[in-house]
Length: 167
Image 1: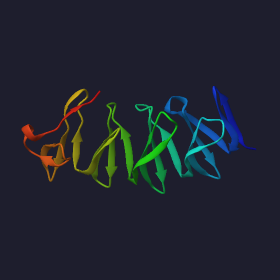
Image 2 (image 1 turned 180 degrees about the horizontal axis):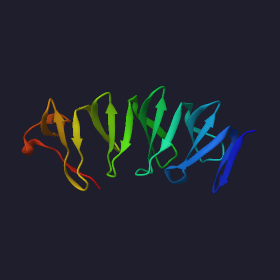
Image 3 (image 1 turned 135 degrees about the horizontal axis):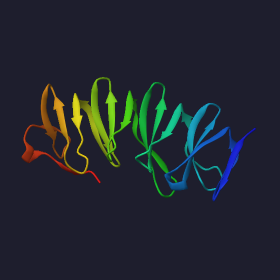
Image 4 (image 1 turned 120 degrees about the vertical axis):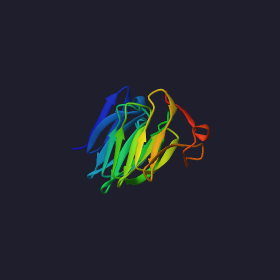
């Protein structure tokens, strides 16, 4: 038996399961044949991303971002107000953690990076400190604490560091 959903918008009964509403009701996480995808809430079953992922999870901190799993690695999908979705970080991370700030912490082997909507700091740092409101992202590279400049490069100089607004 196929499942659909009627809740202001319609998801037609062509999926094995409707998992969750995301993106303020513009999209739904759905499952079909053991794979996960994202459908638009257009009543037609139009797919934003096909059912090709091993798992998709919504995030508590973000309405317009979800993480997905392919094999044993995680990636990031951005969602847009028109119901479209795009993979912005491929399945290359061992884990993606919420931080309680507008950043997600990305772990790749024993290195860390960050994601914020439209911004990715590569996972090449041993440790990262994320400011809660406004400040500099502090990072450790080769055992030395420093900052990230505007080109996502390590610098020990505060005057070269990029100031992030964390709202």
